Length: 227
Image (cartoon, rainbow, N blue to C red; front, side):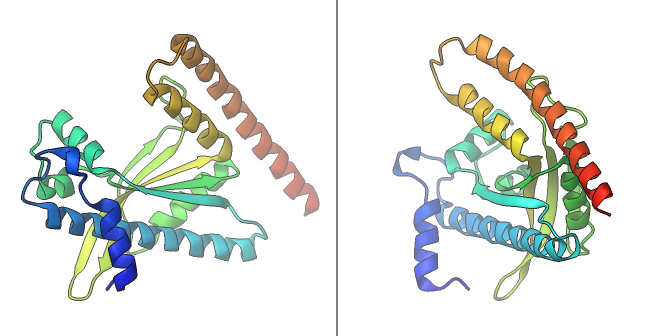
């Protein structure tokens, strides 16, 4: 159970904003409970990744994971996505139809680390792999690259267990840098010369991809010569 200080802090973070009108009307308490569950699922996945990283730092003398970011989708974003799907704004609909409410982003140094971390995470017997989207081997039209996993993990509460889905995005440092900049262009309004910026970002994505593979090749040569 969450201690009083943490529980107060958490509820304040996920409470529905006052200006959201009739979103999830009558389900505020259930919505906050659901978001708490997603937050706990994020902690479960993050802990698993940190344990893997610690183990590999000893066996391979380096950390494949540079850092981990987490996020929970905001209530207005959840509502917008449900509306686009033509679904009612209910807690049950969120749990049954959205896989990306809880998100974990894993940043690795090299491309082969991405697949190794993904394989080790999904090989754990309490992690169920629901879906994989490989945008590294099959990048999006705009140049976006990342490995996306939808996994389901058990979260144990005081009197029951819940299977919660979490989206895990695994990418290199360069891919993450590119995605952050592309996100700014996509969601900031009135960006001047946006069309040319998108074109330049597409070209940069190809450069970054070649650089990632080149850096991995250099790393592999260093390791081979050291042995």
